[in-house]
Length: 218
Ligand SMILES: [Zn+2]
Image (cartoon, rainbow, N blue to C red; front, side, top):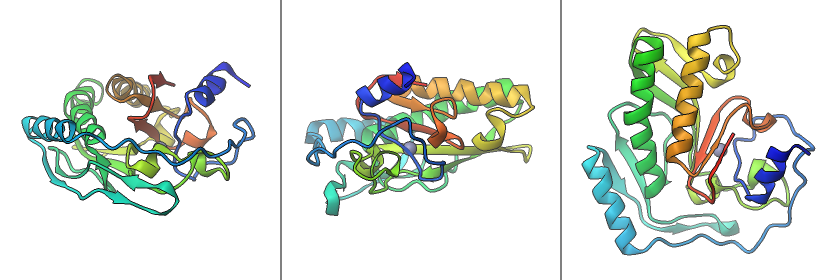
């Protein structure tokens, strides 16, 4: 077991879309009792103020608890962060705040610098999903099960290009490769966890960011 994978297991990493091939490197773990920290009203209000300061339009969502220990507590629906984003549903407010900051402060400048254009759409595989880590039976619940994670799959550029993590991360275009790594590293500085195709086989086609226990970046 590589040290990175061992560390990931130690940190109880959340995980991602069930698109990837199965991997024997992470053994299933017994699911602990479902726990989702309910944010304090003060923290929620402060986060809403931060979103407003970022110029973000959003809707406050009611707290929801679902079967299997899944939940969306203190969540918002991002409506407008300055660039269209696909497939965003419930996000915990801290996740939404960091996502907006990442898009505004990191993605657009990186696109200007490395690709000479703007990002006109960020594509994701979504946020909330009631499932276990890497969708493995017996594993703990993913941060996605608490609306506390987002999977970024691609970018549409102002010049019409469509960049995907799947094709671009190890693709032939060096500037695209650099752009994707720059925005991934920028995500690691803003979210608690940042995963990429370099992390493991589950993340071959997206970057995973979450506000679970970290920091961890790979
Ligand atoms: Zn994910």
